[in-house]
Amino acid sequence: MAESAVRIRGIIFDLDGTLYESDVYAAEIQDAAAAYIAGLKGISTAQAARQIADTRRDLKAEGGVVVTLSSVCTHLGGTSRDLHAFFAGHLHPEAFLARDERVVSLMTRLAQQLPLYLFTNNNRLLTNRIIDLLGLNGLFRHIYTIDDDWIAKPDEGLLDLILAESGLEPSQALFVGDRYDIDLRLPEQRGCPVYLSQSVEQLLRLEEMLG
Ligand SMILES: [Mg+2]
Image (cartoon, rainbow, N blue to C red; front, side, top):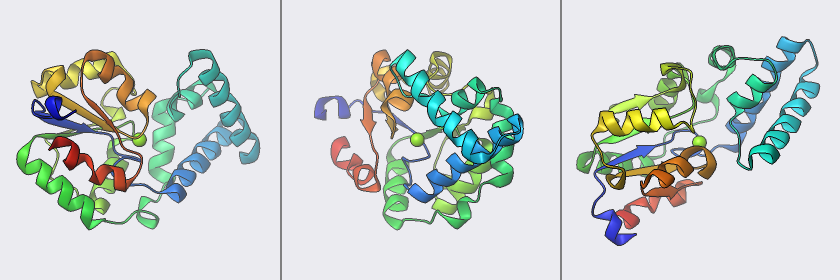
């Protein structure tokens, strides 16, 4: 990794579960998705939660990879657009997420050395609220959210777009995310270096890896 590290010219971060970790907020997201599906299908939230779990398991078994909550909800008859409108109205990241000075320092130092990008399956409204809460405002050269075009990661077109707009060669673009199948598999196949980070502790070690 040390040899590839010297070539890195930009870092593309996932947001949720990567730049913060919160099991309780992750649970609130799952609950909100269940409430959305329950409303859509006229069933209880417990039934909806079960359908979401079953669908996620079935889609994973079919495709062999982890699937996004958006694709699970789409499979159950919803749309990404409506799911995210529901999320924007019902989720309260302010109640769960707090600024971590270690992450703010890390990201500030990195932003002084390299262009940073955010690439998230979250929507613009919640993304802005979350980066505000985390104290990461102004550190990203560009923020890509699902409501740019309602296409979610993993998607080759989006990957191409980010590489083209950033002007980075694949070997220069480091992708950082907490879900390999969603955030990292496609970039890695394209020849981008990737860094799996599933905790703040792992995120803080990113700098060591960069050397
Ligand atoms: Mg994530």
